[in-house]
Length: 122
Image (tube, rainbow, N blue to C red; front, top):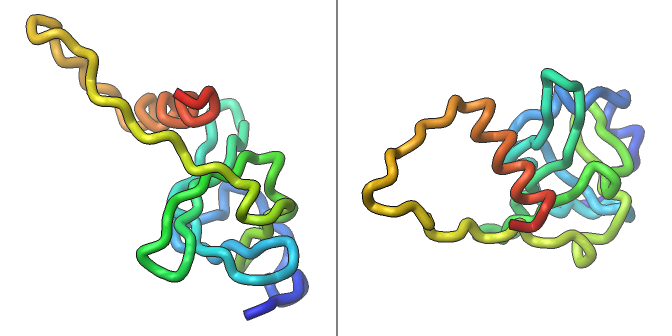
């Protein structure tokens, strides 16, 4: 289904994006939904989005903030085609040694670490 940007409502901030928000390509075709917003809210820095593509089961893509043309009340529009948006890297198995203590991260710190890993392609 194609949508015009006017159908998506008014422009809004990244803080208003919630999981499940529709994501559209530059031509207006629905690409998928927002799976995760990557941002440092304390520093007010928007990193990008993890997009779950349609149709299900789909796959995940990481749209960097520079690859997003607009954030609206009822959707997000990519500035690039979905083919040019990379998949987030797969998590690597733990390299922790058996005698090394397990470190528990607070949720915000864990989210920021994941965002940094995705951005640096780790």
